[in-house]
Length: 337
View 1 (tube, rainbow, N blue to C red):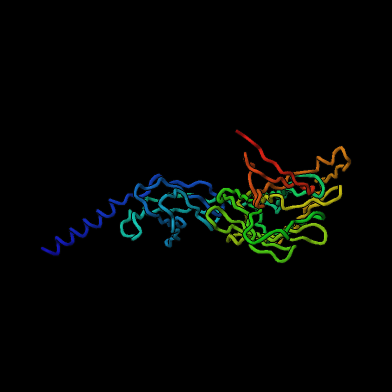
View 2: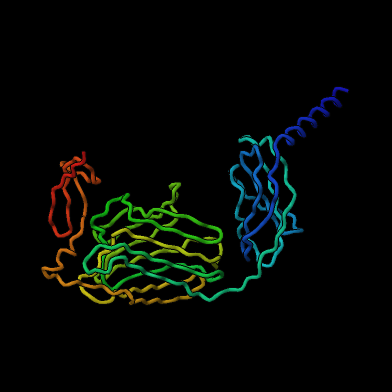
């Protein structure tokens, strides 16, 4: 009799622990391609974390996706086969012990798309903000690929004129920002100097808001112009889902001291052995005449410092020194009552 009572109590305890940990609900799948899909759900009220498992419909073995935070409501399901039907389920854990849990949910099913490869044809767009010769300028490179193009394995982007001010850089310097937008991955990142080797070589990391390094590239000054080299990450497949990426350098590039076009080239290889070569000579550098009438137009403010030589913002009732690009210095005090 005691064994029967104990068994009943044990079953009640187990069922009660399940019932108190409510599972996620409203499962559905979208952003379905030939190799991945996005699982979605409505969050559970007491979720600490989740686990997902998925499999080809009708098969025996499941694959697991863990470490899903309780605040998350989506997760990418990767490395799928094209034209194949899958099912997935989710389980909710209500604390870190993995004991109180909801059990597995009902299944949601989806079918991956038919794979139709696109030709390897990445697009590259260089942009220079300031077209005046011998001036520092913001410099942007935009890259784009459409869905089902072969992944980029490596790229070399270069110019025939201009240079990077690498000699002024130190480890940890912030050089600008980067962004990446696709159907499954979106991030913004700072461009941070990892290290330099002399005045002509620097490794740059792309660090997101959580401090994670999302990628890196190398910048170099050549005998004529600059070079930017990068290697594509291994994402487990040879085709892209399509993306737009952008790298923005803040006043690191210096225009050549002569008029005329800057020729930018890109030599890009795919993971399948394809190669494209890009040439752009549409950016024209101008050198304004330095006559007495317009020499002042070339003068620009470099920075503002206080009496101790520290960089400062403009402030009222304080002596400040204004340093200009032509070497002149102005001492100012803005008096405001």
